[in-house]
Length: 280
Image (cartoon, rainbow, N blue to C red; front, side, top):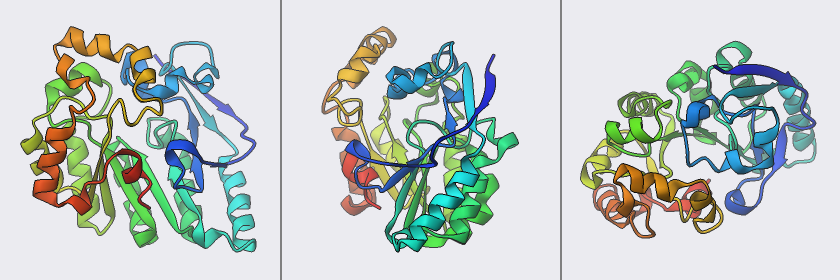
């Protein structure tokens, strides 16, 4: 059972650095992530950060909505515009939560942010989610045009792997259907195979080819910001061994998938890890 709360934020746009250094700002409408309920995403590095202690209880058992987010964002976009910086601003939404979890149906913070972006467009907004709820806002995604990248997380082609490792996430087929629908409407779609889970390389390559303009692959070792130390500390090595996936939790396990993707889609459509996420 999840609990929902509201809080006042001090700012909407947070300057980025590190892994997302190619972006000017990150925007997180929520604190916490309902997809993490019951250990739903055991690899999530955010659960090990101070933000995961914003409320008592396990990560995924609570979500906080930033109730004043839209008021703050409107002011900050206006300020960037006055300073002549809006047209070069790049925004990653979201880096520490999913902008489309259940609470969004009620609060509509993500939709409100997209409406503000449509009124004052930055250079680029990357909208990162694993939720088909993003389809609700297709009208705004289309309106934002080339300034918007819809990035859909699809870590594997294997539904059994999905159920064993991320049981609270939408099915692979449903997420791919969302990606295809957005792309058919003219939205630039990125598939984020991040982190890569056990897969059939040729089958996964075929599935994402028709669903995405670009595919970014990331791993537990390249993408956790610590060469795999965070992922090991979260117990991912032990979990993979217990499930019989031990060979997949090794540096280089992604090479067969990278080869299959690049053979089918072309190298330019398949960047890797940090380079790929920062290709704005």
